[in-house]
Length: 488
Image 1: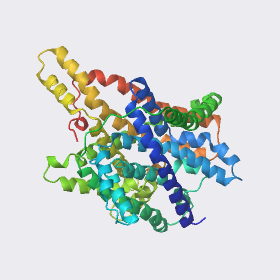
Image 2: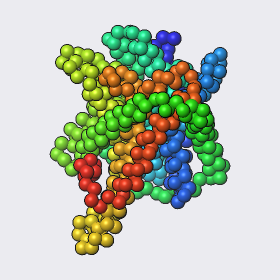
Image 3: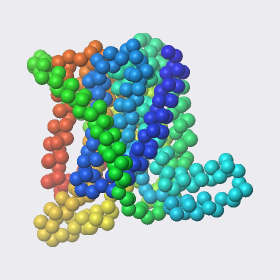
Image 4: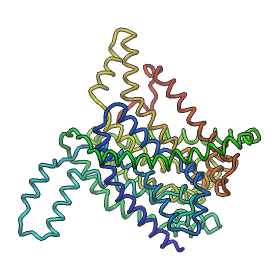
């Protein structure tokens, strides 16, 4: 298969996934808005689990199943598309749920529809209604659809293990087989232009929509019985396919290969290296994103920040493979070659890869922030004469402000830690992160020892996250770290 065919097939599959997922995202958003208490917590837990389940686990668990479909490629492609649908669905749902209220209400849209002259052509009427709908109740369609399309189009880890068709696998295989880097970059131009074209069509509408004010958000009604049952059934199927079955397969193999860990002390050094690099890149990216998304009206150069944010985010929108190949070529040049065999290329690529995600998390934080409550808690922490009052204010500040920032950095670190593409291209000699090395082993099939190493590789950062989440809240009254100090 040629690059053009692989790129065209990936483009079609990604577009179909995004189109099918957008109405489901809106239905799930309404369900989340109507749910209360434990039900809302459970729904968010399911969606976050679907999104953050590592592609390494899913691909490794279904590797043998994919091989059994080698004579039925259409079924294999359909199975991969189904898994990808459930992986990108939570991202689109979060965009729809946290999107600001539209500037045009449904009542205003109805009045505009009545005001269209009957003499107008059908095409003109459709264009007018589409324009107003995208500024009204469909305001979140474009950002949600764009995000899910890009996530599906750039995916490389899962598609490689499941032996499906994608331009990312085609390009990476060409580079691994010894194709000159200049030729690889030339081949990468076609899929990059596809992504840039989609972004260029949607981005002006998004910026214009963001500048428009919103109406007051109305309370969401309860979902109909059959819709509620359909959504719950869909989430159950997704949880089974993406989470329960893969982890059951991995843990079953872990029991058989636990003794292999004793003979692999190198694994723990690789885990430490991966966590350290992920943390460094995540904290740096989160700090940069805070400066980029600060409200334009607070500074004289707000337009400059917006332009800088868009320009710096474009590499991250194009995916890890494109970033890795570009940074690799830059550090092979005469001016940067002295830093080629250092962690700097890997670090720089991770920052570019994480930056759009960090900006999105910052915007979601701002959308969910309760500013009045936060102001009162900050005032209490500074002005309360009693120690108990200041301690209570510190706990409130953790809940209202610092907890969201902590989890944003956790999410960024998780993405950076589990990415095997960038270290495969850019790591210095002798610095192999555990997820990358295990990912290379997974292409040889399932094994008990490999399952055990995979479980330990995942449990190590999870244990660190749990420890920090327990230790940081009691210290929140006195915690004043630079990356937490300013609000976007």
